[in-house]
Amino acid sequence: MRLEQISKLINDRNNVWEAFAKTHIVKRTVTVTEDFWVGKNAIQLPLKTPIFVITASNPLEEVLSKEKNSKRNQSLRDLLEYRKLNFVEVVGQSPDGKWSENSFAIEGMTRLEACKLAKDFSQRAVFELESDTVRVISITGKIMSERDRNRNDI
Image (cartoon, rainbow, N blue to C red; front, side):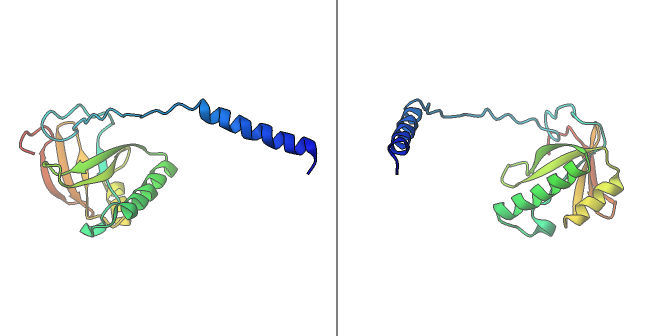
């Protein structure tokens, strides 16, 4: 090894230590807010209705690991992006918060398209949101439940 190569290595090593010495240590915090789209104090819907809420998690109620559900939802996200659909990530959760599934609220679909998409991801149903109404729709297109979107006892 030549003298200039050794000198460069020493210089580079010193530069690394200087970079380390200038590093800031930062704890990042994220403020989490929850806007309820269904239930008490539901907000005005930010997407054009009807909005269909679909997940790829836990197909046909088979409880999968967080990693498997994440991969399934990433596949659904990729498909929504490929189809150039407007969507928002949301969470479907039980009223007591003990159960939740990451989901996508999607505008610009028909009920038939939403049901087909849910079926493709082995789901049993989708949610259909209108300005004042929330419906549970089976993948066959049948309305299984319909209620006021702002109901307090949900």
